[in-house]
Length: 424
Image 1 (cartoon, one colour):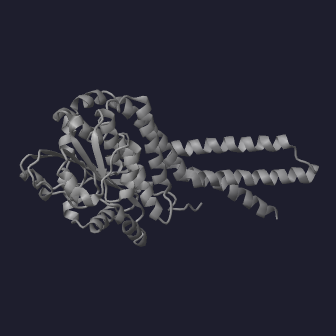
Image 2 (cartoon, one colour):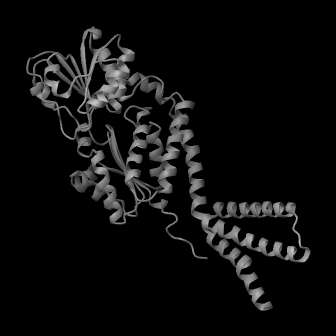
Image 3 (cartoon, one colour):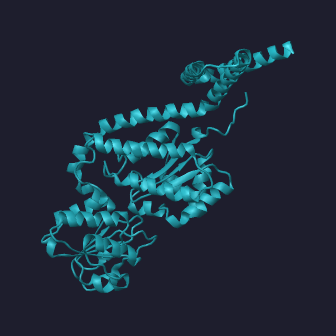
């Protein structure tokens, strides 16, 4: 029995991960992947017949998920796309394969691998990243589709069934928490939020929620986006071109932009005004030299993560429950994977039974000019039951699957064919 060798390539699944565990914010910034890179990266993978891959790039991590047979070729192409050397990339990357890679994806989606445990912003970022890649791809990948859907379900269950997200502790909240802890008379401070992407929007929401009547304004290179956020939260929006003038009056600047290079530097703070600058961007969008100006202080993502330890202690107690859900759903995924791998064997077995059924029903009709509907329904049930038994056996005994499938083929297909030839 010929089997399509391309039907199942999930054994190639791998993750190449650069995260806060090995790389600081500045280093992570070098490996960040931007939306404008997606199209070329996807086209190169397809043109070179390298399988499939997509990239998740956030403030805490950049990860390549791939089903290619040679993940190093994907790594090389990735480095070429973003303009870094493969040697430097390999210094910081963790590589996980097969079920370890799948488990890692599920743990990341669950917020267990985040710098702030239980940070559920990550699942939205995974979904958005995958959809951006999917738009550019020429074909679907059933394994990645199922893996992403399972990751989403895991995230939902953990959020609903455990307390791992109790106590606000996202990166955006950490910024507001830092302000609350380190600033006085916050309601009197002029706050400017630069950038209204996902993290910027979450920051505005947290400011409005936790600060009494905050004097916050928003600015963004694309004014339409800023206008929508300003309208939603009933706060002023300033034109990006007026940034210099606005900074002269700003007490707290929060930068949540997605530029590839710093857009804020020491020239933006010439007058010695006391200013707190919080950089939520990866790569950093604020140059470190801003602190050379008198009275300007700078805090980045890594520093913010140190200020939420109490919440983390409570969340860590919920990790075993979350891991239990991941274990359960990983088992379901592996079962699906086995069935998918052996689907051609199962379909072939059932088709052979159906062929025998059609032959026998034809003979009955030929003899009696009639076939009872109940007999047909009973026959269908028996075929399904026998097929289920066959499927369960080869799934439970994968090493015997080919041998058993071949034997069934000989009994159900070859033997009847030989008998027919002998008679005729």
